[in-house]
Length: 344
Ligand code: ADP
Ligand code: ARG
Image (tube, rainbow, N blue to C red; front, side, top):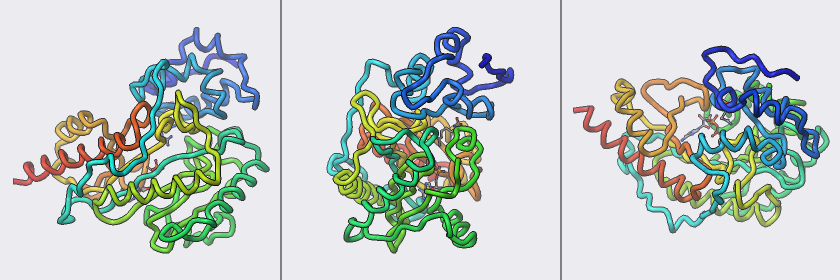
């Protein structure tokens, strides 16, 4: 393997931190599951417009390839390699009254966490048989959920294109054919082993074997962030009684993309901010201050439509779940205040 050819205008963290020295140091390394440097960097090499550009094949990737991954993790999360991660899933520690009780701005709120099973490699390196076993373990665990979390598992295999498309358009299901995941090896054997679980109201959902083996999701209309967080934490606690997730005290919950490590949590609102949207400098000054990320309304790498944005916490590691949601809440309060001011 030779040092990859990055275009001159490449801005990915991969391109920045894969120096020729780091490349030489890592090029012949391999984890016990056989994950190599070529596997880790392929997504960012094939997609030079990546923001990050790397995916881990297993938990051990984060130690074997630390000379590349540590600086990427540090730059994304502001988390030093000597730091430890702490978890706090207690909704009572959250101070998040609805920022928009009249329902003028916030359309919906969604909080998700990524999780992976301790007993298997991560999605980029998992074998087909292991993925199918993971699906089976997860769907069985989901069967025991009760009350408002009770629902049904729908495998992607055999789902009609109409049903699939409607679930994607309504923001419930992952999209198909993502080129970043494709190059990371995460779309192998698609659609086998993939699926979605949801309750009747679609306020509690679990994605199975997409970018991570589980994405546990709580969502609803409006801006009651605490209610969404409480439902999610209840679900996480119930699922942890049945499944053992990959976790360590340094990196928190282990995910295939280093941007998701730690809490693996993304708390977001879909929010109408047409005036801020017309003044991106002011908009970005606020989102930077509160460590927030702006996405379009059809998920990552999509564009905004009609002045509606997806606003979420950007940091996930080195802060607790409560702090991640608090970042989002406080930033949304500030955004609404500014939007009202600009409207005048
Ligand atoms: P992830 O949340 O897993 O990082 P995406 O950014 O691709 O991934 O979002 C997944 C889906 O969730 C997309 O359909 C997106 O529109 C939807 N979504 C995200 N936030 C919200 C929200 N607050 N309300 C409704 N749908 C949302
Ligand atoms: N690999 C993509 C990039 O570098 C996405 C990174 C973050 N998003 C994610 N879904 N993991 O741009």
